[in-house]
Image 1 (cartoon, rainbow, N blue to C red):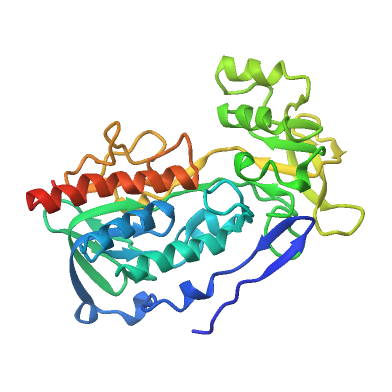
Image 2: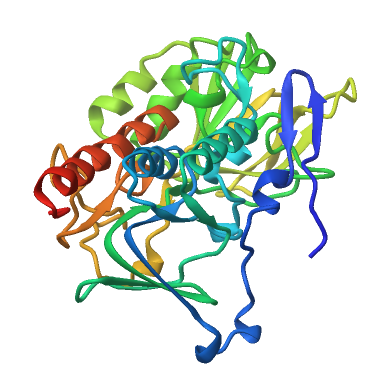
Length: 368
């Protein structure tokens, strides 16, 4: 397999990240295709703890487990959910709210550091996607296209992907403005210089949209909320906060059909074509930022109903812990956190797992 490269290009203070890190691609074990694998060729591994995921929750858990000499196995995935190993952070540019990096750090660079730290303490990392699990009996079984793992305990930290709309100019690469004015996280990116004192847009109609619009008024000169219907689905109190904010204007019954560049040719977002879904009229809206706030999709389909999930598909954990509905299976990070969804909180839940599992194993001889 030819080595992909990390492509970075500066655009008005916003960085475009459009590929994978070299360290992930040079991982010791790359995914095998299903067509080249056969039951006889499947490798089997036994481990005290298997971690599924590649973000801050997964690597925090693996660092703790590896330092406790539990020799964890970690499956970081191979373009799982169409995202590179490292998860959503690989689609983020400057990370400025993670302690220890006063000058900020690229999302893909901090993920590389997470990975190296896990490897340093002995975590064995496979760049393969777990596509099936069996939690019906112990040891637990996890399957990729080329391996079977038998594990005493499992931690699920596969994250959640922000939902995005597709229209002309919304994507990555040539002609697209993703990470060059278009984002799916106002809290992560809203304070970037590219958005300061500029008109901004939030797409959505739920509580997240109201919250992000209010947050962006701290930085933008004006914030538009574009909603395809004539009423929000957000809670009354969140609606009131948004509608009473003098810097917020709602564009009802509308959808974005195109994003285009700025007039100075800097390669960043300059405006939107907005269509009224009732009249069909298309208008021009000059803005420098667009934020999707239409929800997230947790990466839990591969669990095939073997863990309790909530109505939105997030893994249900017992309050104050990372314990799931199956004893010995844990969940950490955005796969079980629909409220905060930050790298630092994900890392914190990874350490919760360590406290529950490692100390119990060390002092009681059992992880449960």
